[in-house]
Length: 198
Image 1 (cartoon, rainbow, N blue to C red):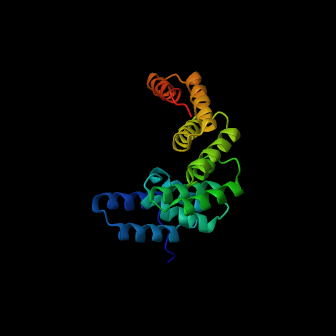
Image 2: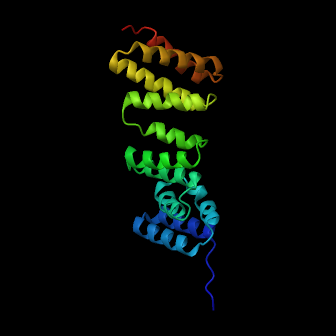
Image 3: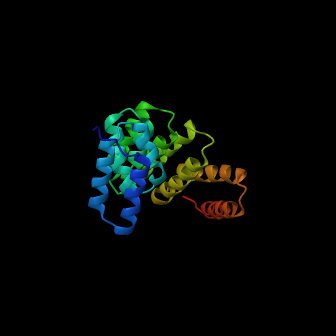
């Protein structure tokens, strides 16, 4: 009699439920490994782990298998990089995976975000976020990261060009902000930055 593979979604959910109550990492990893081995359909694996994507201890092992099967799946590469980032695997490892995802799909915004985030040098990180905002002009999160990093470089290096970039970016964000708390935070940041002089 041929053994039927278990439903991946139910199996992953059961493994997570048991892990949540027992906190047994080795058992969780063993169960996820077995589920991956039993599930030939990669799309079914991705669907099964999707509800637990923010649980790095669940998403990481499953996406490792997905990437082994489909090394040019940019979405899976980004999910794996994100899981690794959450586990503290470090900018070198995560940045390399994000770069692989970008090589496969240059339009993947999440890959660009991880690529920028993992740059260890403050000035390099500022420059990377600037590239992201050039590629995705409507990406407010990238603009906020650019402004924050530019302010950091301006402060650390007494850099008037970085200060101008930070102020200009915050002003652009303020011009489109609608939430009162967001407007307050941006106004406060601008008030502080405009007092700086180098």
